[in-house]
Image (cartoon, rainbow, N blue to C red):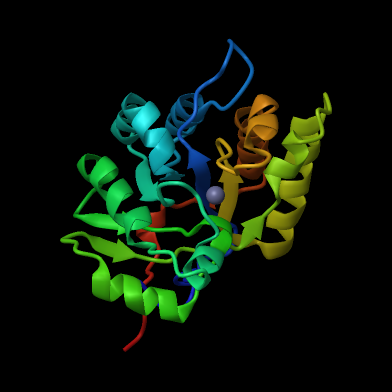
Length: 238
Ligand SMILES: [Zn+2]
């Protein structure tokens, strides 16, 4: 069952963070340019960190082998709709949002654990009327958990629009500042970009891998711990 409000789950212990990546999977256009979902997954795996990748169905269709490998590395595959719409806006226009969930559910079904699908709506856009309708209309045997929110959002995609040679270091510093201020929580980053208007530009300069490496190295130095999304309790109290 999807909840009517965005969920951020049980409070984490101090100096504990959970990595989540939205909008993938993606792969480099050339050797070094573009999204690097698999490389991020491998790096984190080697660092002993389990992340969640909220994937977009339209990209899963293109790169099914990537989410398979990401899952094999021990990460969690989450659900981030099929076409990455602003669900509130489309729902209010009268559009049926069920296929946005149902189609991608079929695409990722083989890559989830315990029948559990963590769901995050694009841009965190959600409303209770749409939620009620989805819970009623969605024919599913999967256990949907969500909508999953976040605590720390450094808008990494903004840095990728700038074509700045120091984009990764500036972005990492920005995230570290926010993480230190919050002290704990779910971190939102983007391993790719599914935004219709700006996605190509942002993907061209995507530096998420480089940023994650800097952020993880520094957080380890500062004594932070890392948890996976399934270690957080998202159950709504009765
Ligand atoms: Zn997104």
